[in-house]
Length: 470
Ligand code: SF4
Image (cartoon, rainbow, N blue to C red; front, side, top):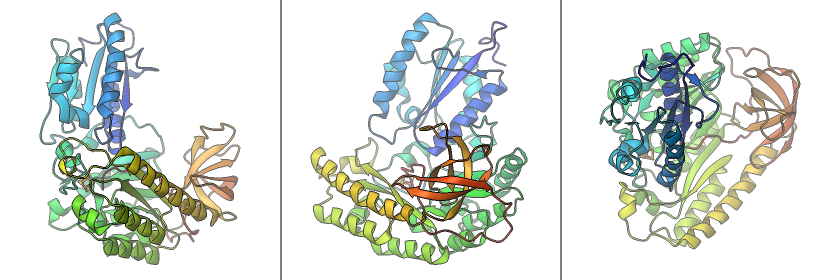
């Protein structure tokens, strides 16, 4: 117990604010779990909390501007309530520990991506003086820590951390370190415990899930892991993010096709359709090899959703390179794409490359790409109008609380009428209307328990979460 913080009988509170990717959401749930283990309760707002944690990301441009804006706001509150503690964790903390110390000396604790488990100790130490600790290697695999999940029916499960690749636009290897895989038996034990606790869907997390296990056994073990988790009774859906196209292999596709709980969705980051730019990015595949992998998965899994990430305006990208990307978009018929305008990140090789493009050139190409992809996404969604989809209910729609929201196995977002449909349960939804980013429909009732055999699948699909990595 953090006795020096918990000085009154009033319940002490915390709030964790998360920026960035699913890995950060996973880590935030662990930090919340540790704080609750120390007797803290979740606060309604950062302004009211006794401990405020910023779990930061440095992938996106302006991440530091946003962080220091938030920290400036918190300083005004801390001036009024000097006992409150401000914690900065995550990738930006790993990268910029000394800068945070200089720019925001009112921060009490800084911890990096490798030492989440130190949060309670550092908070206790911060009663005496600021406690800043950044490690270069992970001391405890974060999934082994207690979690306060934001969903009772879904869980993030980390299978590996770090990355051994060196994509020239990416800062992840610098802040998350080399790839370390978690033991398969530990992963399975965690998923079994989650299912016993009511979880029906897990998302396996790694920067490059397809190389999972190479450091354990000298060979990738991801397909074997999927098969092992598929045995768990009560687990309805397994998702994963992200595979690197160069490591996406036939054995994974076979496991996806044969395992009843593995969802019919693959997020395969393309980044560029130009072989010249792919080489500059150090992605280690060509457009031909990439399209071959898309064909492999579509041939093996009827109705699979293929989604992607694309970067526009990489240094030196010509109009010809951009046209090559549009050609791959047309050929791959992605069900959805996360599109990004290149922005130079410090500590990446691409930041020092020649040929950075004017903002207006990047914007104009980006607009063309988005227009092309939106038309393809709409056509993909229209193809399933009239069918009935299995939807995992997430709760009331944020846009219209009279409706419910959920996702298909192919990760399409569906808003639907369905009174009494329970959160975390499977519903059968008749799809009535398609839009580029979501579908609308009506519930036909709760889904049947699925048998061990794979259900017949609808055509097409769409994407979710953003993976700047992979
Ligand atoms: S983009 Fe993905 S594969 Fe490439 S270095 Fe970053 S995390 Fe690793």
